[in-house]
Amino acid sequence: MSQRRFLVSPADLDQDLVELAPEEAAHALKVLRLTPGDGLWLLDGAGRRARAKVEAVAKGRVSCRVLERETPPRPWPRLVLLCGLLKAPALELLAVKLTELAVDEVRLIPTQRAVPKPKPGHEARLQRLAAQALKQCGAAWAPLFHAPQSLASALAAAPDPARKVILYEDETGQSLAGALARPPAAEEVWALVGPEGGFTPEEVAQAQAAGFIACGLGPVILRAETAALACAALVRFNPVPGLP
Amino acid sequence: MSQRRFLVSPADLDQDLVELAPEEAAHALKVLRLTPGDGLWLLDGAGRRARAKVEAVAKGRVSCRVLERETPPRPWPRLVLLCGLLKAPALELLAVKLTELAVDEVRLIPTQRAVPKPKPGHEARLQRLAAQALKQCGAAWAPLFHAPQSLASALAAAPDPARKVILYEDETGQSLAGALARPPAAEEVWALVGPEGGFTPEEVAQAQAAGFIACGLGPVILRAETAALACAALVRFNPVPGLP
Image 1 (cartoon, rainbow over the protein chains, first blue to last red):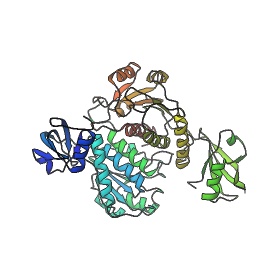
Image 2 (tube, rainbow over the protein chains, first blue to last red):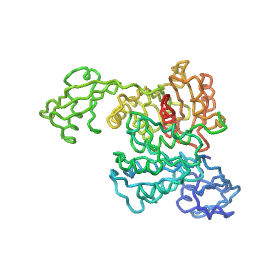
Image 3 (cartoon, rainbow over the protein chains, first blue to last red):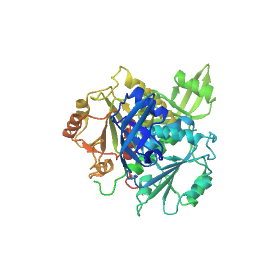
Image 4 (cartoon, rainbow over the protein chains, first blue to last red):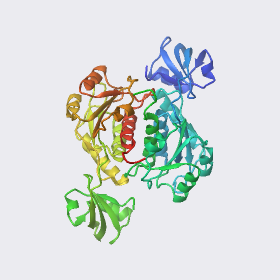
């Protein structure tokens, strides 16, 4: 049943009977050829999902009966990625992969060396891509994509107790894994990743003044999107308390 | 000088004067507009690189004088990825990203549920993509892409002392990070990642019989290429001995 996942609004998921949006209904009927009685999952992209079954099908419309709602636990720690503004293909890759890696928030920052300029509606497009990725991976929520914001305002948004790291290719003495592992265990990680071309020294100093620890990722220069993915993987798949 | 990297053969890198291949020379002249005296890096993709300078330029040809050769230490531990055969876009993404993440070898396996079929020359195309990625990231070598091989022969190739893991979505009791961290520290990691659709239970049993530890990556179903990237990041960016 891995492909039988459909997006609905959080309000719809409160109902006992949910009608799929036209695009979702078309997928259910034309690709998956669902018929009444077939099981499926409804995802609201905001933390809840429900087992459901097709109740009725008529004229391109699909109504579903909700059987059981669930609210899966969110991965721990919370993970917020601050990312220099990248070109569209790199951001689109991130929208998909960061959804699989259960990143909680993405804040895009037009840093000094970032080449692309912020465009209106950019974050809405990434949010739509993340929603599609959600259906693939079965997660219960997608990262929240904020509108592009200044470095100063993104830094100021990080709460004091969060573990704050900035990935900086000139840092050779502090590993990211080491910074993440410092006790006490962080409830929340805020990770700042540069654009293509990296940060200026002033930006690094600004982040450090805001409590971000400069961390290196080894001798090879990762592309910005690779660094973001590697960082998310490291946070998500470090040893989980209680598991060997 | 981040973009002034050029690929040459290992044999050429032994010479004091190296002529760039036509495609590389065209890039040097038409895009970067290099002139005699300009500095650049020559990479052989097999572990060595050299600082060099443009000696002469004529009729689309560029000859370079080698100033200093270096053999950077390879990242530790050695990392071999065994990967179910994926569709071309996923493999192409991996060819680039696994180069940045300094994976040593990639062995593609037409597992039972793998949809694409092995094609002659496939690994050569991935090797070329990895070589291009090398120029981007400045690494001294690219992963070696083997021709597709059976699961049995890939499993048999793993040396006894290697840490061997298989990523399996039904495994919930053993984390990948935990398996990697088991003492003694492994000199070599062999990681087996499924195709889209995952492994059959028989394949998992076959890998376990060959000493591979089944590990989970959390409740979300990662796409195969995302799992491969996450695994490589976790191996590469775990705490480095001697670094905080």
